[in-house]
Image 1: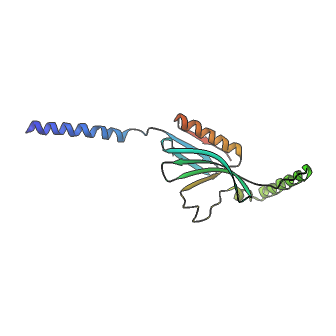
Image 2: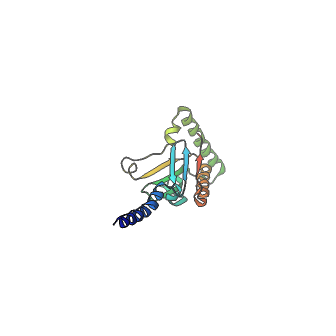
Image 3: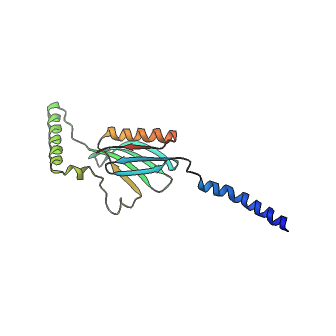
Length: 167
């Protein structure tokens, strides 16, 4: 009887040992981080299911270029640049006047501090704030492309890393 108990105990320990080892093992992949002026985003590389970069027009008034990170969780991260669509003129002089007017308006907003509000992510509560979407607004297409390139490099090579943008 004693031998049967010993055999059962050894059997149970041999079954439990691999389970304990799996729980203590580090995650198979590391973390990718984006540190941006609007906040910080962390994701386990193992949880990234897809990434994309694309461009679209919103209501005929703005052009958006966006990077999307889909994960195995219900959270989706969106990083985007939004630019107003300015009317184009067939005459070069007219277009330069439109461009100069837009530049002056942006400079005036910057001087009074209103540019920060206009450059922040805008959401409609509760429709977009509870949609399990994390959003970050970037200032330039170049910054967005750099973020996407960094993400792709680290995700495809399974290397943890941090992408940083300073204000």
